[in-house]
Image (cartoon, rainbow, N blue to C red; front, side):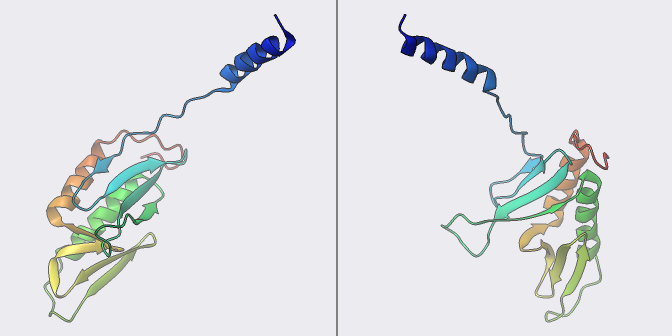
Length: 145
């Protein structure tokens, strides 16, 4: 064998030991109509909400917000339900609330939906997300719940 062939074989062997695979986790919740994907990211167990920017129909522009753990994600959804179920307001009166750095808004002209930042969800969608979060086997090392 030539030296160059031996070097090549050694390089292949070394590179095969250095090769590692990364397997991404399945989303906790995913829907096509709002382009929403909810995932647990990082070793710390941050829950990430990514969704299509509603300003664009044909351009892909993903917006996102996150909370530090599964319990906060469930509580964020529950806070939205509370705001959604508040007494009806006039069409020009909005209700705004903030939970763990995420803005929650119910507009007076659209009182059957809630906005988490610019992600629009109705009561049924929120309940499905809560159920998915509750059933999800959380892997976060920090604040495990």
